[in-house]
Image 1 (spheres, rainbow over the protein chains, first blue to last red):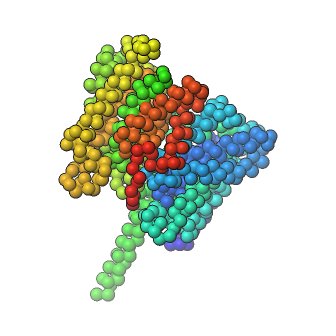
Image 2: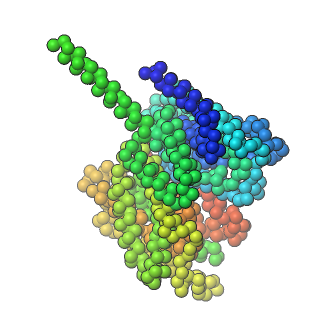
Image 3: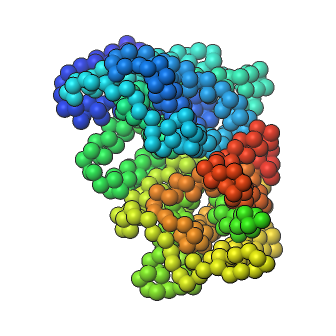
Length: 331
Length: 288
């Protein structure tokens, strides 16, 4: 079983590596880049919120911080429009982590129900700052250096950079999951008071997890900024981003390692595809909302959990059948 | 001075909408992020009644409030009541968000995305009293909100059903133990919480231009109001609602309108770092 799942991972990475070679349509390549950005963000979001049970609906703070710090750095360092801009991606992630420290100190003082709402409120503080402050360019947005790559090739470097970030996010999440730190996060999700009683430094663990999850989301925002070439406050700090990332994890499987990957790959690609196909935005809102409701109502624990349960049921059934056969043969 | 009056008048309308939200949260542990779009739905209902049937905005409430009550009951029955388990609160945000997407898309289809505003003879007129101009709509809106909040408080604190709601607010399992049908109370609470959006939406629609995407701004304000007041605290929602609008108006007049919206969020962050449970919230007990 262990070997099989390792094979799956290798196959998935290989698929990811060859995909842009098979897919030559720039529109689809663009969908692929967005899908990878969101999947990486969802994986990272799940690493804190999914494991600890503290649902953060202000992940857009990290994303927007990553985007804006990249834009501002590129502007002040007078960077040119070429591949060196990608060096700003990790810096965007680090900027998001730095911002996450005070945000986490304020938001993590309360228990999880209130935490959800406070993260939303803090998110709007950031959005309004980006719109109103002078140094962010305000609602006119912040331009990034234009990259003069051919339209047919433009998306490919972004694709591979994002794929790398996604793989990093998955490895980080898997590492946390298997570590003592990850177990402490899970203990907080199951029963915070008991975890505290057993000697887990809950405040420190929660803050560390919160700040760690900011890294990849900030990097995602940085890639988004470079990819777009222009940042607008209402899109960099987008309330829909907050909820989409959470939805991907619930869709795939909240708190599981593969859940956000499944959710991100399916939801973001279909969402982008729907937007491209139905230029009519409101029809797509209805479709997306209905899909969303169906999943939450019929598979509240996510596809990954359901698939696993289905698999185990089949396996146990097969074993039972074999056992029955063996018993039948003996008699 | 004018800012304070305006704050109290408009703030009461926000307080009314936020009360619905905090009532639903307090009783059911459900965060209804669809509240914003439901306010807009209420506004559009009033819009249809007044433009197509010529029914007065306030008279139309006799139709829209019961309609929104039924909408609330249906949403509760069809979706919210089905949520269970430890992640119920988080799931409720997703479910109600999905509902609001569906409503937003439908409203865009029906009414287009162009901004509209409700109109009536009292919308753009004001009267002079003690040297201050009072717009009629704000005064009428305040009276309506005060009346509805008053009757809500009367129901909560003076009737038997209100007592069972307050019991469910305080402790669900204890309420169930003394024989209160918590399920029925929850459904009705959700209905009431949504019904107030009809009135709130009408006033909002008469004092602002709106379209379906206005709901994002609304829900962010309503959520911050209930967090500042203390989640599940009815009085807190009232105080915080009035405080929010007064503060915004004051900052807008004294300093700059650009920072007026932000001032409230900053106050929120400051209050929360000193008093995490909000102004009137109770310290959260063990949440397993």
